[in-house]
Image (cartoon, rainbow, N blue to C red; front, side, top):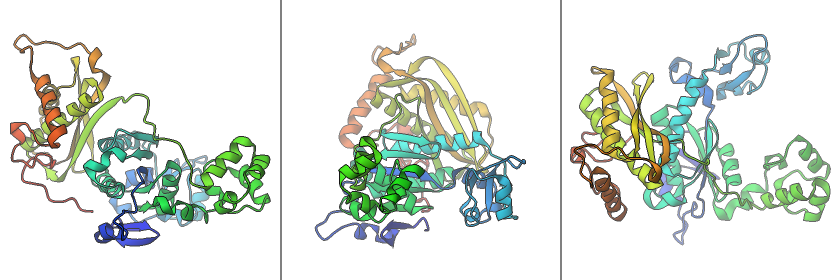
Length: 433
């Protein structure tokens, strides 16, 4: 499925989305669907292909090529030959003698994953990573700001593609379990919305193995009972399931078969960093444009820190060049801060120290690490700093933004630049979708 298509039983083009998602009574079919499951497509392989465009469309696998090597990841072209992860490399080469084998680069995958997760956390703080390449999001708190869940899902897909050069698939549903099933069904590079009133119709035709918690042994027990679909489980008396599988498993599968999943999206216990990054619509070689973007990102990072009651001790600058090569630089401050002016001063100093002369830059990012509770962070007062200063001014901006909307108050340097367009010059053209 192409990136311009969305799956909801029938496929429609992006231009049809707003009309197709409304019923005669005005309801959208993603109403009541705040849970997103986002899964990168052939993640490791996709990361490698960013720097090897000549291999796009060919069967490619990532893994060790020794006598005991195994497949770590495979492109969808390779999967058509029956190749899959954890398969011995020798068997993969027999299935497809012309397959291209690339060694894994886990540092690269971690870096791309961090960028993807930053996109998610820019949408909502309720992000539950499951691995490097997938996560659950609860976007209920972002609907007023960004639009309905399906629209947010499309924004995520576009940003991941534009900023990281890879594609992802998104499932949108009322619960985590159904959202994950939806993303699986929509792969690769797709979007599937399961409306709340269609959950049962979506679930019941699926094989029993689709249920979360059904492994090989449980599936054998269910098949011996003549239960082959989720609908069969749903219409089996609970007592029968409990006798066959035990109280916990029997109740669990019965609940899932009717779409009941009480689990919430649970973020990690403590956020280790707060950051934002921006991919320019066109590669940029103007240092002044870069500095304006660093100012915008620094203000945004500081605002997020204050909103969460955090302060950061270390400022990290990220720069990605046109060829996707990436560098980071960091500086630890004498005391933690949640002030945009201080974060920007550090980030721009790191940028200037790079001495880049007309280098073509694709992306810049600013991140605060060494996160601590703001109330517990000692503040370093400068000799010429007034008792009420920049921090209080930025807190006043927070209050104005909460009342009048983000961007209602901007640093003077960003006035007339499109404010939040991420380009720092004339309003940026729309990103390709």
